[in-house]
Length: 378
Image 1 (tube, rainbow, N blue to C red):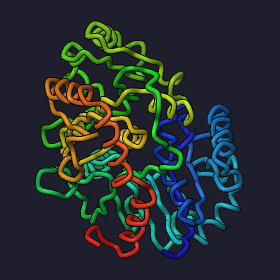
Image 2 (image 1 turned 45 degrees about the horizontal axis):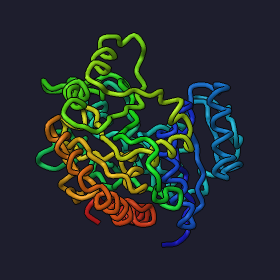
Image 3 (image 1 turned 135 degrees about the vertical axis):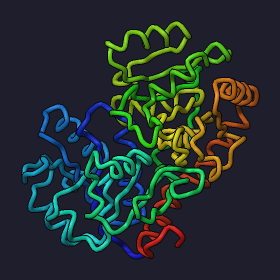
């Protein structure tokens, strides 16, 4: 594939101290650079909060991206990092815009690239927000649509496609930054999560909710397994009833800012864990959209087995070794026991699965090819 100029828009720093959220974007940026493409990053923000600017500046230094990225205040030309005139030049020279959830709305920047891709990392929610008219997702600014919802448009997924053809893609992992982990530091199955990311959606009599709604249905899981379960959980202290319930049922809670508040700390937390108990938002589970977590892909790349809540992804990924799926708490406990009973086999299978399915050197060329050819079936 020829060298492309890629303008990428996504959140790495606007909500600082979320190392996992930063990594979900960095996987694309680093992977595209490793393929030889010229990548420029623009993150729209509401204001130049000093904490966000400081976090952003550290990211640029740590990942050698200085001069090639900017925070852009929405509706203005104010930036941190590269100046707006540079953003205009990047946009005019770009071959492709990859725009996560349509974040970039500045038409001077989003308009010029001939391929303008709405990159959907939040399937079901993005489509339902558009369908219900609750939020303008900016679909009209784009001429290609890609999603990590592997079942979107399939018979078992009720979520509307909004009249778009969705190119299916897995979340990439830039494997050079995610080597096989060695020593288990925390002898537990863990995950990093937000109790509530944003509001739930009611559509056609069904609720598409958040992690809170999924986890409440699995609240008794720790009592079903001998393995420790650790949540690096962002939950407001006012959620007193839920906090009491989590502790009563022996979920171990860690401060996500402390253990995963930067890309490096997030990586240490993932690699130091025994494996992942992968929890999905209720909206992903209820919709059967086929979402698979970029976080789970990081665990797999680190050689850490994943026991993941079923969203329909098992139709597209091999499960049984390294990656196991579950629907109920009983299913999850059985899968955790299976992994613990033959840990080395599952750990080796986890890394092999990451290399075969999630390697950015495989995922991103496939995505760019399909974007260029214009269709999901390409």
